[in-house]
Image (tube, rainbow, N blue to C red; front, side):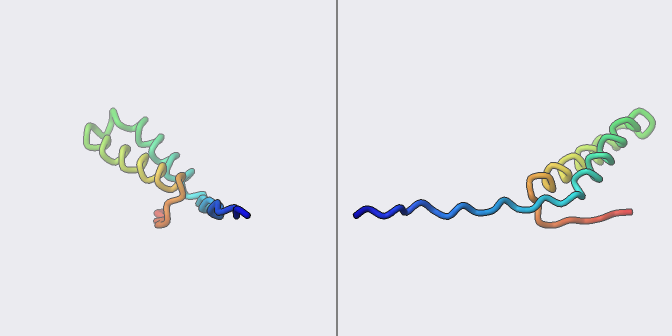
Length: 65
């Protein structure tokens, strides 16, 4: 008799709410780019990527105040 050998479904990682905080920071820094200059673009990109990492279930959360 064949057995059902489908792997058990893993629970998706619980998402941290910190991604919202970093998404807001990335958006705000995008609006301040004209006053900061091109160097601010690097910070905006990093904040956006970190927000995306946390949204996808990233493990390491850093809170800055």
